[in-house]
Amino acid sequence: MNWMLLPYRRYADFSGRSRRREYWMFLLFYILVYIGLSVLFGTNEAVRTPTGFGYGSRLIGGAGIVGALFALFSFVPSLALSVRRLHDQDRSGWMLLLGLIPFFGGIILIVFMCLDGTRGPNSYGPDPKNPSNADVFS
Image 1 (cartoon, helix red, strand yellow):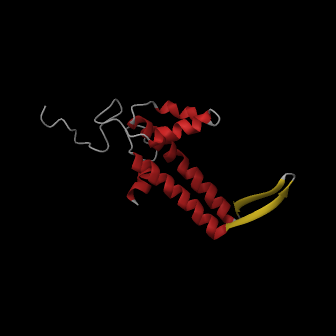
Image 2: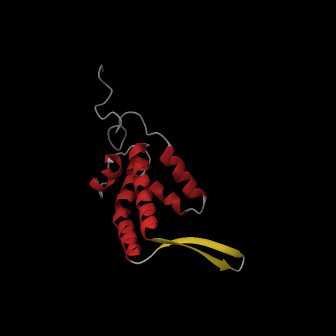
Image 3: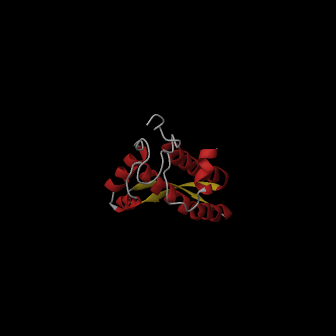
């Protein structure tokens, strides 16, 4: 649970580095909150469209407002976490703009978020896996 809430404690911290575990646990937490809201307050619907049937799910009542507030509150931490995740690989946070490229940009960012960070310190800070630095005998 600590990994899921760590981005909220580092709310608007765009400096430093973040591990893969922090990124994916935060994403899991985000998805679990929306699944919980959908189970409690959601409605599923099938509608007739010109090409057949369409299926959708939406939050009804106050849950839609709660979901929107949660998304708004989580926007800055998720943006900061993504920038720190790119910093872990010694890439600029501006690489997030690749997500604006339709289809391929999102795939490239998913691949970047799955890659391991650089070992040891880089230009964005110490290694989050081993912050004590491995240069013991030098």
